[in-house]
Amino acid sequence: MPGSSLAGTPVALRHVLVSLSARYTLGIMLEVDKDTRVKQIRRCGKCGAEAVRVSNVTSHYVNGGYSGRTYEHECTQCKRTWKSRSLLRLLGQGFLAGVTFLVGVGAIVGFITGLTPLYDDSIQGLAMSYGLFGAMGLFGLVYGTMLGKGILNLLLNPVARVLP
Ligand SMILES: [Zn+2]
Image: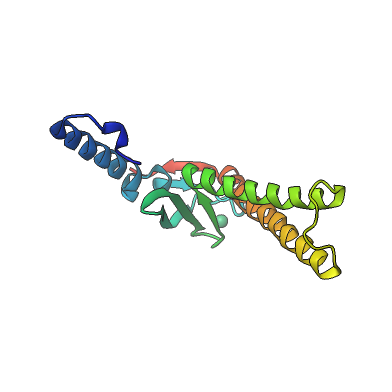
C-alpha cells in the first residue's frame, strides 16, 4: 500500500512527504512538456531528413498509477510513422509479453513431453489446449517483436537535435 511506510511519521511531516512525492511524480513523469523525447528531432531512417518529430503522446495509467507513455513519431518529409514506448511502459509491456510467451510455449512443451497431463485428451480437448496456449505463445512473440521494433526504430532514427 502506498504511504504505509510512512506509518508512525508525525501527521504534519507525513503531509509534507506526500505532497513532495506527488510533486515529484507530477514534475518528473507527468508533464509532457518536460519530456525529453517529445523535444527530440530525429533523423529519418527512411529518407534521411532531420524531420522526425513526436506527433502524439499517450500516457498510460493502471489502477490510477502512472505506467509510462507511448509516443507516435512522424517524419514530416516522407510521412513515415512509427511508435516507441517510454522505459517504464517498455518494462511493463515487455514483462507481460515475456510471461505470456513463456506460459504459452511452456504449456505446449509440457503437453508434448507429457510433463503436463492433458485435462481432456479427446481431439477437441487437444485442439483447445494446443490452440489456447499456442495462441498465447504467438501473442507474446508478436507483442515482443512489436516492442522490439520500437527500440529498433529509436536506433535507426537517431536524435539529430533537441528543441529548447
Ligand atoms: Zn522520412
